[in-house]
Length: 300
Length: 300
Image (cartoon, rainbow over all chains, first blue to last red; front, side):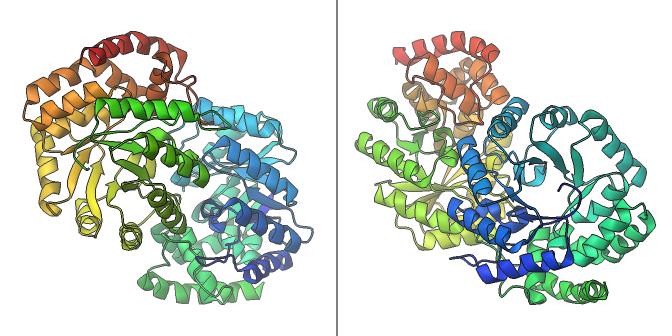
């Protein structure tokens, strides 16, 4: 399941509850498009702000709606005992894989992060994807640590935080990591603005925010890149530069949540306080950009 | 209560439960020394790793053991609804004040942080201390934001993350913030290695990790500094340089938790996984340093 387009849907919600109907609709849109896998409860799915029972319920709904498409669930938490509970919950809810980031409050050492993955993989049945995102975890993986963790049982993919924008440097970066990890562990790119560069450079998965909203378009881009049509994949990514710019400026979650509301997939911005909806100025900039993307999505 | 020495005790615990007897003993040691206030459930008290009921129980015990010394409790959480619940819990448990840090998963904007404090203070009865610690929250306050938040009702202190090591620059830094905030809001220094420099520069509180273990010594240092005996206060801080060095290198929590065990205040390191005990090499360095500090503490 760690190949192709992994689409990360939002978790539609308000301050009081999950909007279950809207969540199921988002998942069904991904199933119709035929994405490779669904990343329920990613950062885009607000996992970090939800409690244990909410996380379980979101997963139940996602797995139920996902048909035969595998679902991956974040099990990240500050405390290892909580991660272990969430891992059990995820497997009980029917998730096919788990995603684990070394989220931190106190700064973590390399040894602490390695031991976390060692402890969690020792008790897992499902495969695990290592979630490397220093923007949210504030932990910086070295490639040597990636190599050690990738050698643990159950580890099958690494979600890396982007690649250099220069294609040659991107290839060097992916190749360097590739040489250090077992061949059955795939490398997936995240940070949508880097995605095509990453795929063209040898990444095997796009862990995608935009794919949670526009799965056909992102699937097409992924297929072009993975089939060696780098120029065609790039063409779309360049077309999408206006939304990448908004992602970089306001964060992909705020932009995606506003986009979902604007195109009628959700009835509200769905961000838990203290997170606030996208600023009105940015929202105005987003509208015409979305119109272009929607017409692309519908043309596919 | 936002003056003098605010001592932050550890929360003795293992992977399964809080060690209630040891927690009460730590609090009683602070009461005997006569600290100005007790910061239960600070970063040093592992608040970020405890669930709601554990946080409530720690507070009940702390308030019960604190005699007439006021207790402050962290109510920080990623989601505002959780912060509001924790604020209610803290007041119900008898805490005299709350401490709120803008902990983050998604990067927060200034407006989001201001709105968090606005929302929380609107429903609080107890006074609030703003907890500014970019190392754990990854949010950087501007002085202008501090000024806006300090103008909110219930805000009575700001816990700042250290001061410049040069005494004149430290004074400039404290004076600049002082000019922007109401006179009833005190400025407290944290980051123990900076504490005396901060107090000598005009800070009114020392929010102290070491004070949670060696309250008499830290109280003496605080009194010297607040009474204008800068040289005497500095003398002690220079004596303590070996432990400050370990704090800087390994983090104050890991060092304090090892210290508590070494001097027999706790029966284990008390750090929730993934946090691991202090490295054995550092522990060996710590032992003779602690012997010096203990004899100082006993001489007072």
